[in-house]
Length: 246
Image 1: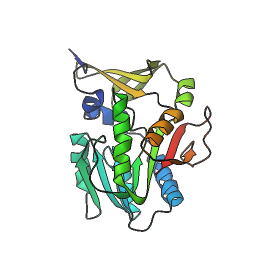
Image 2 (image 1 turned 60 degrees about the vertical axis):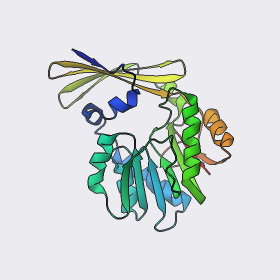
Image 3 (image 1 turned 45 degrees about the horizontal axis):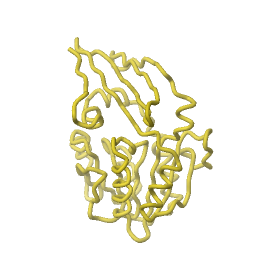
Image 4 (image 1 turned 30 degrees about the vertical axis):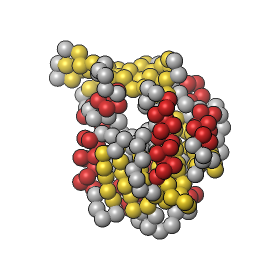
């Protein structure tokens, strides 16, 4: 039986809550994540005890690392499974909550981080604007927002159309393509006699798109970087699009 996720619910609600999502991505590079966070907090010159919102925090690994640097961190994510997992790490200065990033939290922070392409999942472009507006509402007078997205021109130039990743005795058949302004990743595999098919789909948003959203929300871009070492952004050469705005 094929367990296809073509239901009315958003793709990310079923896939991010699936145990297979975490199996496929278990080898994501923590060192890379920590390098980015070290560089960002240094660049932003965050005060000691600064408050940080980790928006779309997943299972909390970045929130946990930020907290270990001495910051007071709140991690929010739409996935209940992720937040349930992350709760085990909670302490007086590290909290987690289930929250939709399109809605304001009603609290302000010294910094809001939205890292590792946790944006552009929505069907409706209006939801992107709502998210940027919610970020604006979440930063205090002196605060900064950091949005780390894939660099679409680079991604499209280096798209691997088909590959197989074998992890935990599961062969994940992955195909990638661009269609109607989205970058798709189809993931098919079998486990214990069942076939699964998940589709990731992220809007192919460019620097121009983000600049427009940020400016229309009455904010401005302070800086743009092209990788986790915070080197200069180059349209076609950079792997990442890292934007600092307020």
